[in-house]
Amino acid sequence: MSNRVGKAENNGKKLFWRLHHWVGLYTGILIGTLSLTGAIAVFIPEIDALILKYHYDAVSSASPTGTPIFGKSIDSLIHSHPDYRSLAIILPDNPVQAVRVDLILQPRDDDFMRADFFIDAGMDRILGHRDHQNSLANYLRQMHVRLYEGYWGRQLVGIGGIALAVVAITGLLIYGNFMKKQAWPNLRKKVGMRIVMADWHKLLGISALAFNLVIALTGAWLGLQPWLMRWLDISTPNPYKAATVMEPETDKALAVDWGAVLQATKREFPELQPRYLVPSTNGSGTVTVRGNVPGLIYERDINVLVLSKTDYRPVFKYDIRKQPFGHKFYFVQEALHFGDFGGLLLKALYALLGLTSGFLSISGFVIFLFRRKKKHPSKANPWKATVIYSLLVILFLVVIALISLFVGYAQASVIAGAIINALLVCLIGYALVRYIVRKCRKGHQFA
Amino acid sequence: MKKTKAKTRYHTITEHYLVPTALFLLNICVVHVLYVYSTGKWGSVWYLVALTGALAALGSALVVKGRYYLWCSIVYYLLLLAFPMLV
Image (tube, rainbow over all chains, first blue to last red):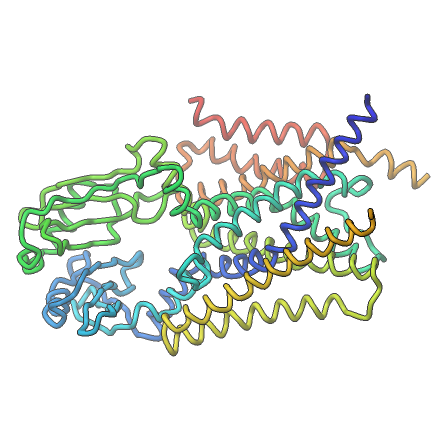
């Protein structure tokens, strides 16, 4: 009886090991790429702030009233771009940073253009602008969120999250088997490279397991969100849309006193730190104020206050603290994934721990290559293959970054999409052919 | 002599279960402590002291790897996590 239990347990462990091995091998390159881009992506606001300060000289002087002033600059922007589609004013976290205006324009041809304008919130003057799509901040976000693949890149990243969760859980389940005589955190000395890498793989894998599991599960949800919400019939929390009460052109022409908007926000929602101010253009005659309540672990700018454009009275308020558990659970995912709820030190920790999954991908691949070499001796150098694959990933990231920054987002997206889909087809094709050949060989052996 | 010493030092339950659990909780505890310190969301100074103590306890338990010390630090941090829900 105990023998049978032992055998079943052994079979279970073998299954977990196989899952860990094959899922890790086929998705390792994806996990490694996401680990690297994710470690940089946690610092997007800080990187963007430095670029604005040093490249665009977009710095705010001290405001005489203590609150940012930007009304005249907004009027001037609207006057010079009367056919704009939408406008969002993004207030900075730090008063020395410039106020940013995200303006979506509707030029003569069909293709719309999105530009960021920078305003000195002390002097109320426009400092400069840039193409939003071609910015480095947009590149870093889009590369991590959808690998620059516009069609189903986001879902591919979600699959990467599932794969990381599978390798993390199976790794934990087989951990004991591989640590029969070894104590954590001992590394064996005077042994081959395969053993050294295996020891580091186990040490870092188990040490950062909880973090990687959280990143994997939240990443899987964020990536597969559009599909999962459709399949499971989940609606977006807070789908509020103000009723249309006037003609869109009349709405656009209504002047907004931004100082009054900020005052009304302070009065109606005192804890809210306003970050996004969006005047309506659809005829609802409102200004939407989005922002954060300090110290909460939720997605950025999820709290909402909608004010009337005419008398600045509240039309709608969404305070995440007063919402049901489902809403809170929905909005906690992104904050947990990007770690922007505990200052710069927490972001640094996120980046450091995030890089462990990249190291685990590389070390896992090295172990696989050394093990294969041991079974089937050849002249191939496992390190050479690992370095080549790693350099190819870095080359891909750099080339797409350069195209996106200096040529255009659309072109970079087309090239990235072609490369990723071609690689995916090759990988799936290779896996299928390999499986069929093995099955045929086994069949012949039995025959 | 050396072999016997190595055998007595290796404890399967500690290595296979307690150390992974303590590491799992240590991941959460580090993020928890950084969050609390950076946002000032600790409610009372005692909770902050207790939380910092939990981080120190989990970290040192992993260094010392005493069976009971690991158990105690794990239970202590779990209780600390549950405390806001119980109060």
